[in-house]
Length: 538
Image (cartoon, rainbow, N blue to C red; front, side, top):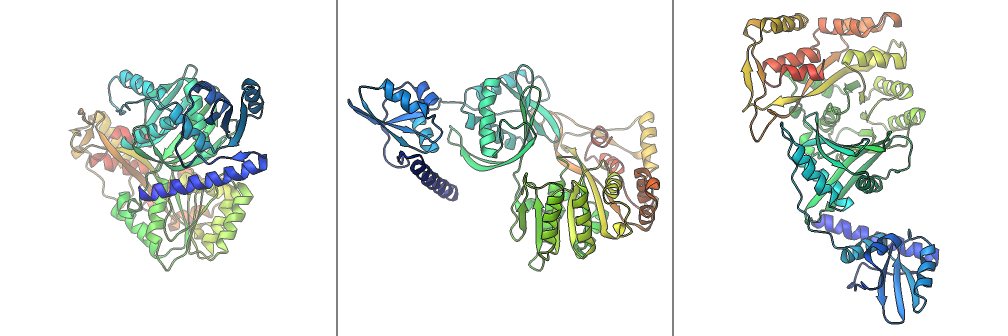
């Protein structure tokens, strides 16, 4: 708390210095509102006009009025006020934006608001949505964002979705991978919220293209509670307005350990081998929200020793890791420019390089070249499965005899909801379901022990007042595609003969467990439900 206060004090001093310099450029006096008592003059202008004109009276008597204005106050306001108060002598001074807000908190004190805790329930939640919507409608714009973030953290949500619809704006939280509606906003109120988000994330409300921003700051609610905002913001114009998805980051260094990833003994053995021999390329594959960042940071954290130099290129830097050189590239680099940045990083003699995401051909080729020259290159990539990602990567870089030599591992993953062990209920599959399960079990790798379908027990979620859905947290389903001799042979074939299906079939024949197979085993073990596996993997 002391650190936060000192940081805020320094930020205020910096703002006042900037405002003073701007006042000199404009040719007006500067007035420091950060110290001293503030006297209110309620009979000069009504509160609504103070907001509209963006002025505050700093001092006044029968013959003089001293107004404070900001650098964003319209120029014609000075002329209007001079004509309006023609019987008095007016002076104008520039004050900071924070100074203006401080005065307005005195002229228009925030109303006492009781913040309703958001509850995600399995039944009818109309009343809860109405109550939360009313809360949002009654608070300041800054408090709206802080309140939503505070509630999302308490519910362990991963994202906040603000979605423009015909009549209103829907607010939803993604909890354990599933979206839940929590409130609706009027468009008038939403415009205020968008302005706050845009200002904090450094994005434009007028932009016609998709934008990415980041918010990292401390905020104090009207109740006095402190909320830390650490969000990645994605904004995109839609038919009815700007939709926003804010991803929450509440990451701590102790979270990034390989033992927290839930790797099986076989999976851990593969990852440990990569850490012992850190060369080549490792790709983590999956959709947004599949835990790729956590997996990459856990690898980086394990590799992070005094003997190694680790450099990352991230869009944006989601967590600051001591001892790692992290380079943010938010909205700056695309295509060849990004590849040039990566080439520059490789010239800095790193042992390990992490590229946030491979998006284009030049970056893919540069990353592979780095992997071939003795570096360990970690990155994420989009693909429905490990074999699909490998095929797509091959399409990007072209047939290259060194491709298989550069690749070490393609790890695909998806997150499913974890069953609450206290509530889960066992059941035996019927004959039709056994037939369906047997078809998947028959595809298991040859050397893998196959479950006895007659002894299989499945589980479904139970419910309680505290946990209406019967799930608690998430776990990953994974598949790890290694460059086995059979896979390498396929990669040397002519392009028209290399298919995702052939790669996956060969990888399974040589020991790879697919995400569906992994999901089935975890469903049999009572960690999740069969419905969750099919919902996420298909």
